[in-house]
Length: 147
Ligand code: DQA
Picture 1: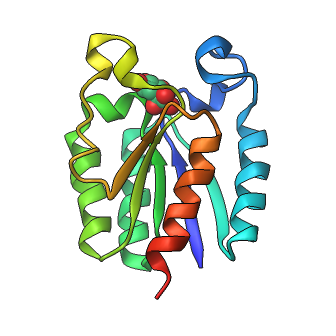
Picture 2: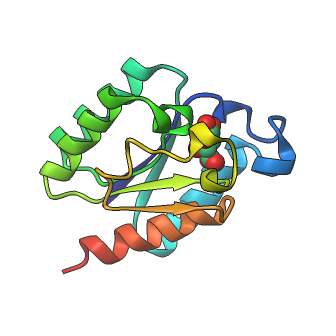
């Protein structure tokens, strides 16, 4: 089964962006880790990143049409993009899992990070576990699509 791991704005700068918050590993490292974790679960994982709200919404439409489960770190879009929330809903409406991941624990940070417009739509949310959260999300996808 194919799974997309979708990363939102500024996550292309992982490794150099606030390493104290997001760690020192970059997006390429995430790509290889997710491929490895996915393979062990029988999942074919494609890691994507965009700074563009229209593009990430397009990826949700494509996932809904192609019946592809989604792991998503919506980054700052988490806090204000109703457009992305509506698009995520379309994935859920197809009976597909959509797992929200945050590398940091947004609840422990700025006030504006305490609200997610994606969480009410997502199958579930994993926060504060670093890159390991993506492994947890892939495990959850494998579990949810099995039967
Ligand atoms: C983030 C948390 C968001 O608040 C922030 O805007 C990000 C990354 C995380 O992975 O911890 O860009 O989603």
